[in-house]
Image 1 (cartoon, helix red, strand yellow):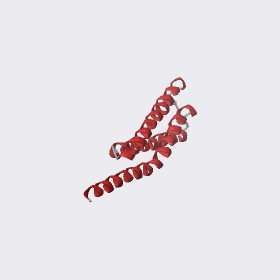
Image 2 (cartoon, helix red, strand yellow):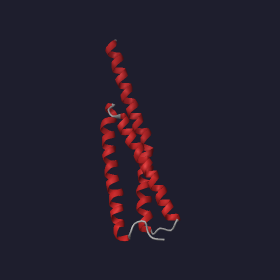
Image 3 (cartoon, one colour):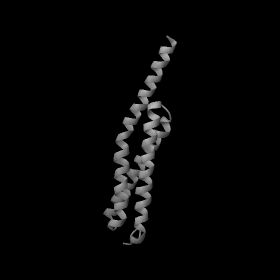
Image 4 (spheres, one colour):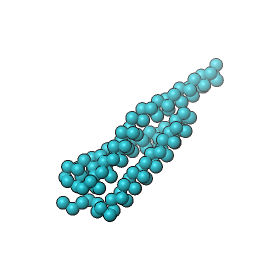
Length: 117
């Protein structure tokens, strides 16, 4: 079986998926840390987090398929490793960020009821 990615191009796969995706997830985490306590951008932040989980699960599936069909290490590893990180780091943080948005909404409602008297 011919490798899906030649050995001399595999480093680019790791750099783009791992480096680019890791940077994007880091920026998303920073956005969530700044915006969630303020109650801003709930749909965008949680939607992007869910998108990364789905992308991660897709990468895991592709990596497992590559492993099963006998692709070389340099092919399946750069799919499986970032996929696991994307899915199983971002995924458990979705309820945490959603809770921060709920707390911000509750603070807003409490402040509004105080203003009304």
